[in-house]
Length: 222
Ligand code: G3P
Image (cartoon, rainbow, N blue to C red; front, side, top):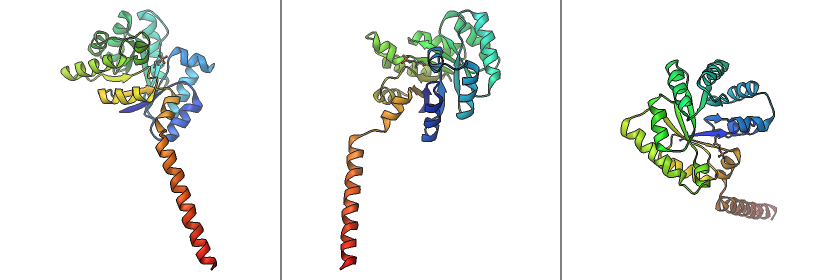
């Protein structure tokens, strides 16, 4: 499973990269706006840190605008993946951009039927939003499982990018479902490291080691 960070925060991306487990980054207009820096500059900076796909989302709601922004983003850096919304114009845009050799991540996907459409339009990634479905009392992970199964049934090459992940179990469940990618906030990546038994084990090893060394020291002093 590939791990992407769902952020535009440069410090967090550098830290994720240093952990050695980062395969890419996804951004969206809300995440970029939060950092308060120019969009193009931010995307290029991220592309230079991470040796993998970096999703940059269009803001135009219409086909013409999406194509114009998408073609422009794709020229910024070889790592850029154009993110389009799963609307009627978004799917049309996906078909056109994919035909031009531009990788597309179809975002705001909330159903298996939408995922079928984007696979047929040649998307490189589909992003089902797990947490936002859970928020409205619908199982986001069920949608991920359905998409994975449908893509397998027909051999669609579109990769399932589980998005809107809110806790480590979302990542684990997405992996069990066979999602190709999980994109997560930095906080979740950090949470995945933690286990109280690892901490207790470390403390115990350190204490035992210290005791043994003290004994050796006492022996040597006799
Ligand atoms: O980047 C898209 C998605 O991961 C957003 O997540 O937490 O805002 O629903 P969230």
